[in-house]
Length: 167
Length: 172
Image 1: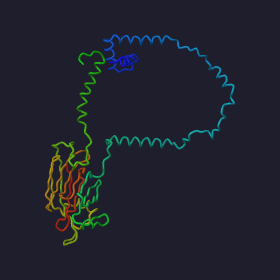
Image 2: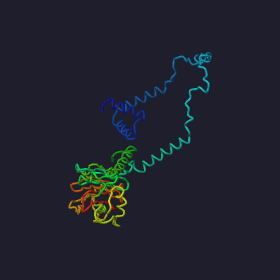
Image 3: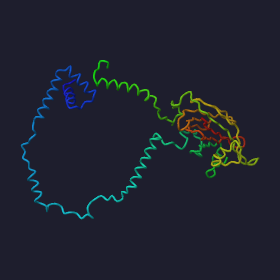
Image 4: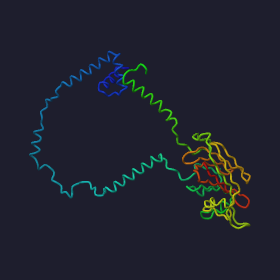
């Protein structure tokens, strides 16, 4: 383990960023690595020193002067916009009944997807079909039946009339 | 692991136990089948080899014109309701009715009265139905996902004075 890596996990251990397993490993490493223990103590000392520091700043507080200047200049504020022209989003179209209905529909769709496992059943039965270069007609492929017609003679293929095939 | 002490060791042991318990469940989880191209040597492995699928195969002859008036064999009334919407014929009669419990991946070869051969092979079975690989001799082949009670109909071969229609229907 390089020194940079060691400093990194000591810092993360000190800052409480490690998980349970990481903390356990860190404790074991600290127990057998004197340099690591020294680094951890250095970090703790640095933290203590920072906590002792009072945090006061030598910068003067300018806020009272700024506030006084703002109060003294009301004319600089933008004129109040009449309420009819106020740029406010128009939400009148947002009918709560429609919103509720939409949410209910979305929930129903989500439930249906979960219920069916995300796989909508396919209506047709055909998954793969090869007529080996011959003419082939799929007359029907739905929830009732699948009908495949492979005409033997050319005259058969030409005798289709409307949707019904003449035999 | 046995030398570990404290909460970290407990968490590690718990994680290992959970992983061991979850592994068989993950392995047993069903995988979505790949259906396309199953005929081309990509046979599915999801069906259990011992599973049997009941298959009904009905050979029907439909014909038009010629001698004899129109009529439908009483045993073919249900198929007439299906085929009559798509095919124009005067007569329908049942030539042969077959049933067999076919194992997954077993090929059921049926000799047709036309002299040709019809082969059907269940590839797997799931909640959507049975995946059937069908081979019509020198005619067409395909894969079909067929639920119970929904027939798959193949026709077009000349037979006597009409055409032979093969109706395959799972009954499991």
